[in-house]
Length: 245
Image 1 (spheres, rainbow, N blue to C red):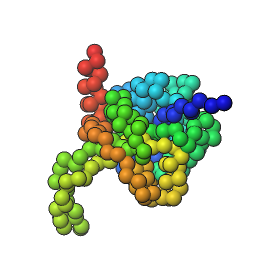
Image 2 (cartoon, one colour; image 1 turned 45 degrees about the vertical axis):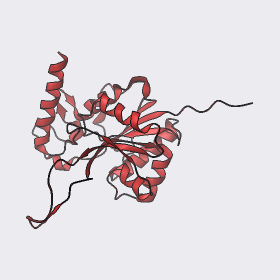
Image 3 (spheres, rainbow, N blue to C red; image 1 turned 30 degrees about the vertical axis):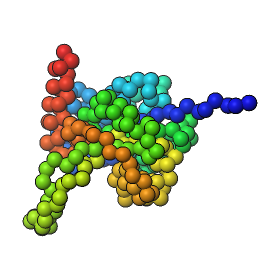
């Protein structure tokens, strides 16, 4: 008797355990930058809302926080829907947080090694459902998976001690963004082999000898990192809201 083929599922995982030290301090907000409000919602709440836009396409929406984090429930109060998973598995580095989250997803949430996962920075709160879907459409049939990326638009310099040392050819160079989409089992193995030094999932897959697919991203899908980034993010979100009204 033949058994039906297992349906390949898609999960989202948002590492949310960083302290956001480069964002600086703010008089109205103390704590990790991903919980700082922008237009009345925390940064991570905007990020979660973008993934909610995928609807039934997602089999689970996971946020990974630090074990001692008690601020997330207030920052994202509606994160209690049937497919939501809040995982207190954050580690000392981004790579450790993602790896711990993936392992917890398989242990607690029933995700399988052959399922796909979209890993996305909590601080990239300007991503849109359309951008996420473009990555899913491009990668779902791919052997490796891939990432959103933007071709480098500016002249690229290297420097030392505050002085230019060389101009680097920018052709064929990209700014890596998220989400990054890979099969869970392959990504777990790659992260275990790579260790804590990699700063994104694609780097781990590359060290495993694989070539992730580059999918066109957007300049607006930037990682809110420095104090001046918050004003720009708020202006973009306000513009989007105005278009809806």
